[in-house]
Length: 607
Image (tube, rainbow, N blue to C red; front, side, top):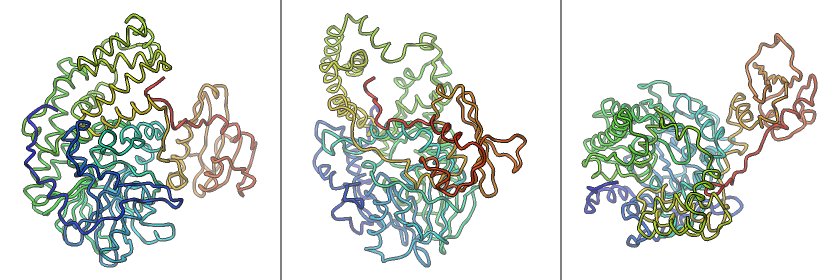
């Protein structure tokens, strides 16, 4: 981002990040039942030192703030555990127990966060659970606060559409998103001054067990009020902002406002680099504007699902106003320039924020960036095609790379030219040339090492946490190959939370279409109160609800419950699970034979 920069003398963020501190988890390490480390906050101890040459000073500052760990009092009766995952867990004390907001990513880190709270505030039971929105870092640890057998009678509140969007974001495209997320958060990088120093939104992601306790109470409209364990809550629905399903809410008796992830201490993502549905910057700004007016005068502190709170009504209004204008300006100016004929890369190079926003620390591009957010706005309105027909039917990466290398005079000449650009400081074009060279011949070790060095330099100079992590992870994989741990979003706990149509859809997106072109079969699944017909034809698996007595018979009818369906999808035998079978049982085997299992470690920086 361009100058002017915020003042380095402004220590307000550090004062707010330390305010209300009660105590930390010592040591700041969380392990799973097998003793595997799923979170190590102590690994960021090096951030206490001065910023080295291998990091952008502004990102170093943000990482230092985000790595602060412990239990903090937000206001009387409201506490946050920060620094034990990418996100925060908030605890609101009620009449009989506690209402937990956003139980982190993993059950293990959620358990540790709850234990830390109880160490200072007593062993209070969980009497309510709230999900602010449908991203995994806000529900994945739910079984850490509501273990199996303890959820009865405990309301679980979420914005309307939560479950549908949690599935579409984490299951349908989950394999690709999870792979890219390992780049975005630098999950497999060492924690060191020249490697992973944070992700802008938080330190990094935990790698424990993902879970999901399904919601029992839907928030369906702004102004809806609920009382949970004596705690009054007033909600504002904000769909289509940072998540397709999201909400802000006020605790009027505490004069505290929860902003979910709609306003944090960074310029957020219009399109996250791991991949997602493009967010609507226009409606995002509109809901922030609505929040300013709707909750005006009713709070003294605002907190969010990441970072640290903001105290003082007027300070919150200023913060929300600047956040609102950040998204509105990016949206409107991108539209202005695209309507003048500029393409996404051209807009990204030209657009600058107003000086007043550039000077605001919370508007810096630590997590989102002005560059890739303008491209996201362009994509939302005009898609991937920029109108230039030269880009309409280009060769795929490897075929294109081979031709570029040939035009440049062969591998040796291409490598020499790329090194010359790197020495001149044009790292961006050096990366482009070297990437073509690697895709033309992934066995070219000098090209891979030179490209890794360029990526490393680009990463060390980036103010944006995900950009840094992408560059450094790419360098790591070029040098050492693909490897490391992946977060498992396909575990039984997640599957049990899905509805039957969602389970079928999760199978449909894994059908090997070409192999199934000539297949034609129907299977009816009969559940208590519902009969669904699955049809595999022309390589596409479709489904619909049918009457108890369908117009046409199916080749196979299975009478079962959801647990039975999960068992079948895992390879179980219908006859061994007490499932009613009518028709040809071989049809199920034929159907499942077309279901593929994607490679969770597919190549990204090589062909």
